[in-house]
Image (spheres, rainbow, N blue to C red):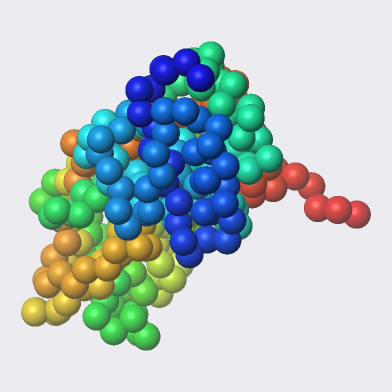
Length: 265
């Protein structure tokens, strides 16, 4: 294999069926590669191949964004929305890597304190069983108050994840913006809002000394008090894309989410 990347790290997840076996197969086929368990990833590589589901990919994206290392996803999970290939397509993947037949896309990420997210940051009250009142500030100016189960702040990449389930719009990953979506708001006039990624988003509580449950990509949970400040992360996740089709985003919507398809008669 041509060494477009001098060292390729193949990341497997012991919690995902087939991840280990597919990763070992790739390791045997790619000369300049090394296996890493997802709990013990290395920054001493030039390409990360994440073998697993979307959860595996998201964890890899947060880690490797710190080092400008691109990620390629091989889906052995349920949906695999962020993945580029299936296990039976590994020979095609290797061929494209050998011939530099790919591109690398920068994907916007979110940050709050020392934590980052590729898809979304979700803020909920300390008692998740009931609604709370959240004050939304943009650039220190109060915009509105939501009585809701929580608020999702998502990237365009995350617009097809939890944000979509909560009634948010689908947004092309080419756009540099944030989505703000209330979760089960207790009013008919609460609507999602899209803002530029240069904005500073602050979520505060009406009540003093209230704690927030804050989730990053649904994988890392933190308890923050009184307010949560969310901004653009200085680093981007770098996704290695095998398909150069300019309409690839819409094709994936149809393939993975069955978007725009008429119901069967």
